[in-house]
Image (cartoon, rainbow, N blue to C red):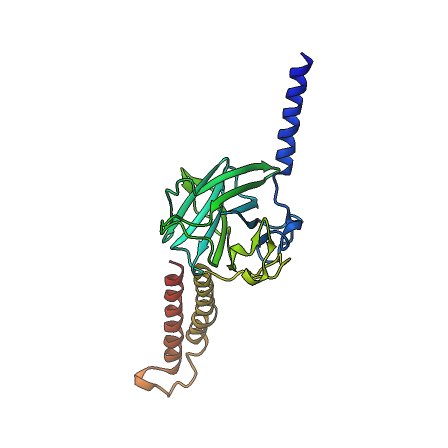
Length: 278
């Protein structure tokens, strides 16, 4: 009886040690693997929402993702030729599953990648999720499975699952600088000739996507339109009716010309603001 108990104890200890070890080791970032931290300015002490590491292992890339997605949610890496969602190769993990996908416009569709990708480890502890994905560097000719030996702009995101596929990530997305993913390998460490970042760099600036730029444009148009032009047009109608009573270009008093001009510009900016956001 003692031997089976001992074997069970050993098995439990091994399982616990594996779970404890299943987390992204940020101390190796910039030395033996590349890392990206999101959002901008976060630190490795726990304020990062999503962390990614990458390293070449033989003919494969090994990616680690660690973040704080919603319960049963997903974490995803997108490989893009530009900074706009669409025509991107995607690797994501959710729970004990993984998905190789392709961004067709704003939709993420599963891709049959055969054995090109596998999930090695996935754990969830204290609200933080970790997974390790192994993916072949070459895509075997499938145009929707990119070769990873070229530089890409990296998209990081997490969000809820929507059935068998990823749901909308809302604002939980970050566009990272262009990366040469083959700059780090398990055998050779860091190769500066292959990298677009400096070793040890763990805080990388993000850039605004087109969606973010449109939101900013919406806010600017609405703020200027309502706070400056529309309100000024109302002031003309309220307080300037008796000014220059004998000056009437086109048969209309000056206050009405000012009121009409400012109101028209305010309405035009409001329309532009709605167009930007929708």
